[in-house]
Image (cartoon, rainbow, N blue to C red):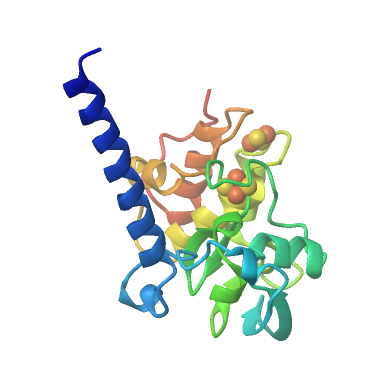
Length: 212
Ligand code: FES
Ligand code: FES
């Protein structure tokens, strides 16, 4: 390999390192999240921050909560480990499957990708609060009627994403529902049933009958 190529490769690696460092510094900058950064972006825990705890004051399923969490704890850790709430499922733990989906201030978020500290002052809703009191909500009834759940592991996350869609208050079409559940993986392949259920619940254009 020529000296010129080696030099170019070394420079490239050096420049990549510098870019990664700059990005990492930007992600940890205080106030970054207010400027439109992704939820949890201030997340990467430095070695010094491990074990550090902060107070989080938020609303969970309609109830006020105030507790101390480790700065590195995710919202999913907070829900499942600290509060014993198992509605949000831990499957991939890396933002790829949607099983841990919850609503934060009305918007769907993968709780495994969001720091618990970042929900301070927010309203968090899990699948547990999506019914009508103790009774099933219209979407849950539609899931049953359309047989939209098999093993059920993806179902809480699906219900959360679909609730966010339905709260738009408009008649949904098939493409909107497909986009709305694009972040929710179902290994049982219930997608056509889920789509029909959401269309039923929204009064949107369903083909009628049971999906194949
Ligand atoms: S467990 Fe959070 S996206 Fe898969
Ligand atoms: S119903 Fe089994 S993963 Fe979706």
